[in-house]
Image (tube, rainbow, N blue to C red; front, side, top):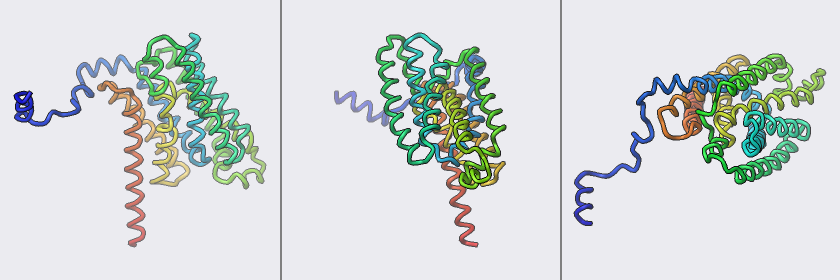
Length: 297
């Protein structure tokens, strides 16, 4: 034993992590071509998620995003258990949650209580379905943390179609939605159907959350639906610059995370969340630096 310890000491400390086991760029080009569907889906999700995230922040719905994702997870888990389409199950669960929050949570306090009730219910229901599922464990794990190899060509068609529909609908209601998000009292006084607009946005949010769950998993969707917009709002306030920058941040986070995950052995979600958080930290530092310059001047 002492001889072994002596050899270890002489050779230097043994690293706890071998980076070669985490990153390997062997056959990387072939992997990129093989998983092109996931990269395209991530790019679309990052852009649309960033745009939707701007209104999530303006309407104080960050907590609701997590609640919708839990019901989306339950729907996907039910579809996995009963042999249905995981995408369809995810969409169904997300829409149920979004409509309930939109109808019952008109005020912030009511909305938070509804989300607080839905979150544990959805998570518990999803765990129940997964515990009854006797298929591959990777399928169960991917619902929580995402899976880059799970985007087939039919799934990609669904994902792009849903994202495109959300984007078109968002553009159509952009002005009244922005007015209602920034000043709901004045919007209602001007005749804007605030309740209808709020419900429409919740449906759009539910659809994009369902898409995000399929890529990044139910636990970490906020990395694409909250963090990019929050980062953009740290460095700019223009009505056009904020959504464009949020879409760019979402795109970089999603595509960058997937490209790193192709060379790694970890799920895709840690890479996406790390890039997204890093962007937010940089924007926060830029804001702090600007504030110091402004105070000094």
